Structures are given as C-alpha cells and as structure tokens.
Length: 294
Picture 1: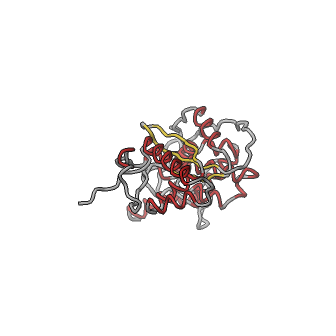
Picture 2: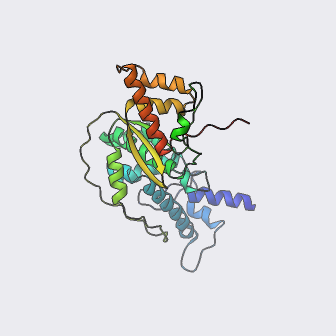
Picture 3: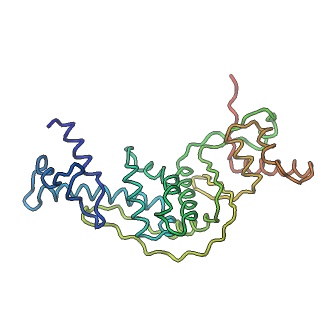
C-alpha cells in the first residue's frame, strides 16, 4: 500500500459518520468489517485494538466539526432543539463534508441546504431557515473584506449613471420572521464553547431554550461590521430595494427608480427619503467609494 493510498483510506475512515450513539460504524461502505480493515494499517497498542485507535480519530473529527457548527448556529439549535439540531447537522455534514483547511467555511451551505429539508426542522421550518441565514450572515460580516467607504461629501458628487458597490461585509436579508431578536438574544447569552480535547467525550449541548412566539411578517435586515463588531440593522423596504439594486450592479439612477417603484410620496418627499438613505449608509460606511479612473 502506497503512502497516498494509506492517507486516503485513513481520511475516508475518519470522516465516516458516527452511529446515533456516537460510535464508529463497525461495517465499512464496501461491506468489510471496519475492525479487519483497521488492522491492516493500524497497529494495536498495549491497551487499545486497531479499531479502537481508529475510532478515537473518527470521534474526534466529528466532535470537532459538530462543535464548530454549534458555535456558528446557536440560535438555530435553540429553535429546533439540541437533539434535532445534532441530527440535522450530521445529515448536512454527511452530504456536505469539509473540503477546506479552515472550519470557517464548514457551515456556508447550511441555510440553502436546510431550506430543502423541512423534515429535519419540524413545524418551525421557516423560522429555522431564517435564523440560519442571519447567523451565517454574521459570519460573513465578521470577517468579510472592507473597501474605502463613500463619504457623505463624496455622495453629493456622484452622477446618476455611476455604478456604486457595497461593502463586501454587508449582508442584506429579506426574512419572514423577526428572527434577528432571537439571534441577538441567544448569541449574547451563550457560554463560550469548550474545544473538545478528549476523543471519548462530547461537549454537552445546552437545554432547549423557551422562545417567544413569532408573528410572521416581512423583515428587511442589514448585517454589517462597524468598529470591528457585527450589528443587525432593520431596513425599510425602500432602503432594502435601493441597497439590493446597488449590490446587484445597477446604476445609481436605476437603483433609485427600483427603490421608489410604487411609491405614493410626492417628488419632494421621495428626494428627502433618498437623501436620508444615503446619509445613513454613508455614516455606517456601507457604500464603497468608486474606484478612481486612471
């Protein structure tokens, strides 16, 4: 067996999903006994069999990735409950195993994946999906890049035909529930998660929290970074449409037209609304300054 073959076999064994009791599976995907397979390339120790030594790494891998996603999605866990959360996370990771050297990217696809699996969330499916979207937006906002911002003075000089970009860390979300309140409350109250140092133990999940009843209505949310902290800001529908159009590459004139579509305001009121939106966005640095032409 070559070194590359050994590495691939070891990696496949370590990443195989655990049983519901968090043990290593005793039968490999090809039908072979896992113990027999392990004995071919892992020496037993004085106290552990080859299977038991491999099981340590298998458990350690899964406990670490489960804890990593628990750290990113505590509000989702609070909404669906710890047991259901563990089940859906294991199902997600079985279909979307880690492909990056960094655990930061592990949960990137969870919101879209969760939306396609209502059987895993129960009666709070839409609420759970909204929470996962907000929590991943927080990750993106925390470490997203930042560009030189457009200042209020600079905003007065731009032409209607210009294309203005938004800060990469700014995330815009259209939600069905005011789930940002839950996300803020859970993130403020959660304890620091302990990094698992023993492959034979699992970090205990907190008990399911009692959550307030949520009334369904449209929420427009900006998740952004300001002074190295992540904030949630609710937007009006006009703000959301304007910023979304700028994010999608519209010209300033087109973005304003899109934002004001269907507005019953008088022209003077519309102008004031747009000025206030740009003043607010400029104060928070949401709009990136246009690149200077050479």
